[in-house]
Length: 212
Image 1 (cartoon, rainbow, N blue to C red):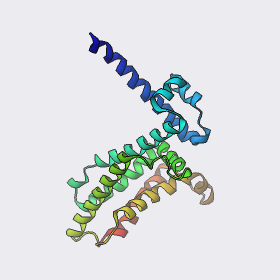
Image 2: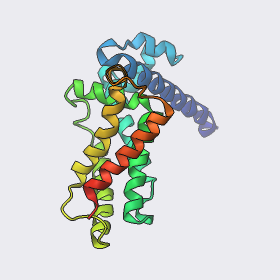
Image 3: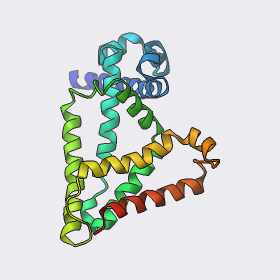
Image 4: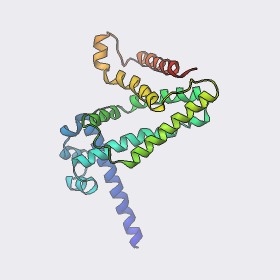
């Protein structure tokens, strides 16, 4: 009987924690660490402040959890691309396409990254899980590059970290500057055709960097 009684309690706790994290992610993405309010997070999560402090500690601890989870989410999704099953050029193109689509589908990720950098990354420093996930990602990209060099498709000596920074940057900058860009360049940056053209440009740019 004791196990039966604890199972619903555990499910309730898990559901409450998930609601708090979802609400916190939305609030931190919208207002940053300084602007977000625990009261509002609790309200949106249909929880109370006591539960937030119980599960996560203070607001900074909750912010830290949200940030780490956000980075782990994209790292996990990258691992599911199964790039090792594709020819090197196809694998790299899939990664570029995925990164662009992920940014479009998860706009909160970009604003959370902005917030993380505003605080000089201090909320990520203690996460061994994140460092481990990042190492796996770098190794995955390195493996694609090595196969490409062995096949004579890619030039040698490309740093996988630098390549990833470039792939991220050419998508990230476009989207973070979409409002000013639309005004300055007199074109709708978020028009479906413009987004398609940008993806094509991103793929072409990366391929020109790596092709032998």
